[in-house]
Image (cartoon, rainbow, N blue to C red; front, side, top):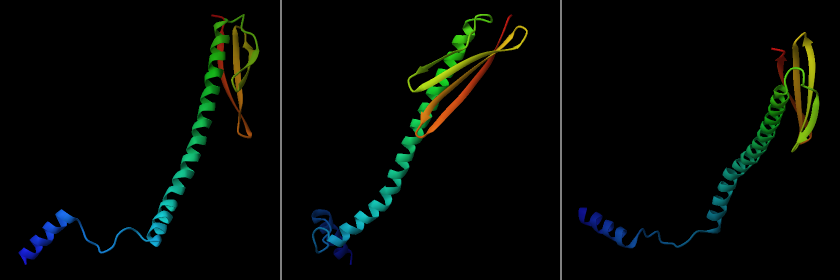
Length: 132
């Protein structure tokens, strides 16, 4: 018994497994392709959606960066010199308004807007500037 097993093991190690046939049949290849397509299709859909989400996040980040930069620029002008302004940077349009809240206190509101596919996205950042 051990002799047969030993011979079979040596034959396997030198010649490899002998299955009695070579290659794959067309049915086997089609089954593998079907399994792969069922497995790969959801991954492709997820990848496409992930790309959309990343580009949407990039546009939102660009909008908030521009709005914050314009807010800081207008705040840097000082209490009496801050004036309304507007402009565009890349795909982002922004509008800044300065409103007097009370004596010695102004509110600066910067609204940024951009096109996200077919939807117009907006965000607003606000801060106060005082006389002191």
